[in-house]
Picture 1 (tube, helix red, strand yellow):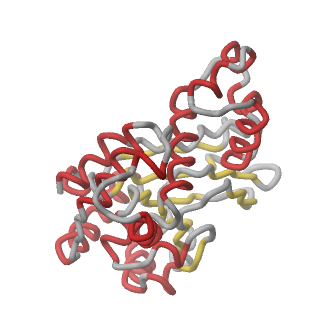
Picture 2 (cartoon, helix red, strand yellow):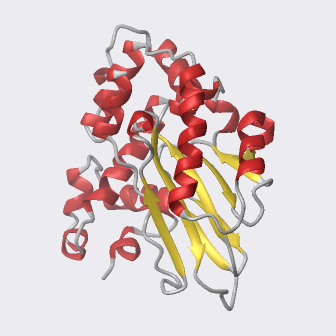
Length: 271
């Protein structure tokens, strides 16, 4: 449990605030039960306050996590989105009420015994991956539930899941993850992750529990560190930011940022 709790202490994944149609679309995150916080980063809700004039383009940035999500208006259609090494764009209808669960890195496979690589870089119907969770959502959620009730339903279900799960707290894996998080993803993966396991074995563990390699996870962590830092327009203009986080040239920084976010840094942080 200490290894799991350490991830939450070191990592706070960011999804950018909704800007488009801000008055009509809201995004909120709320905490799970304290006993679930080593596994689940947050519950979240993305919804329209009133119907929009046009469909809504929602961009999900790379955050190193796995999410379950569904529309409260149609909870029988529920999904799981795996670790992604680039942003994902969803064109939503002009009215929606999406609810989700964001699991901290490694925790979805720990709770459900699922190989994270099987769902990496895509989203799948939850029924094909964890049928019990899909059925629970379909049978207990419906339009009109408020955030407090949603959280209570999730808490009750995931506390039961956690109580029945068989956890593998491999210190070699979690020490490596801890190093990556402490260094904000700025490290030499080949040299700095010497945790008593061969690079090949470590890669296998990362692929099963994270969904990709230590190198790719480190890049996402570095990107997330930049998002949380909220750099100023001035620091971007002075080319200071990409040096501080280990990039050697601006072109590489912009290319990688755009891959994870979908837009350039200046557009993401521009005032």
